[in-house]
Image (cartoon, rainbow, N blue to C red; front, side, top):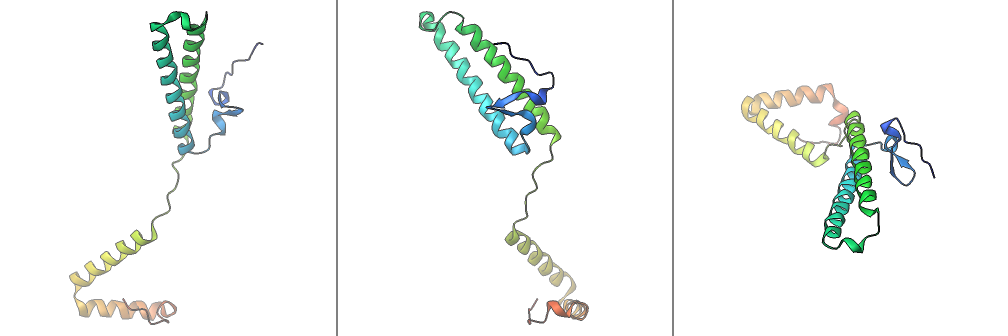
Length: 139
């Protein structure tokens, strides 16, 4: 069986029928790189083990193992290059953390301006956005 070597690194097969270009996020790329690194380490360990008992493996095994390492390193490099072109995943801000930040800012403003000035600013906010204060929410 003669296989065609892809000229575009994005066409290299990662796993099964999935190629590098099918990876859509940095997280997917990182997971695949981790898998490849574990596979490479496993093959290296098998090579080291075979050196203690060379008769255990068949003829040509070491050559195939080294070839597999080269291909896995080539795919790993392609994935890392592809990951560098992807945007990082957007993390939604934690609502509680955002509320805590806003509360700290308001407390700091209240302390810096004083209660009277802060009350005046709250009255301005209520007059500009009465629909937000309709429920009697206090600041």
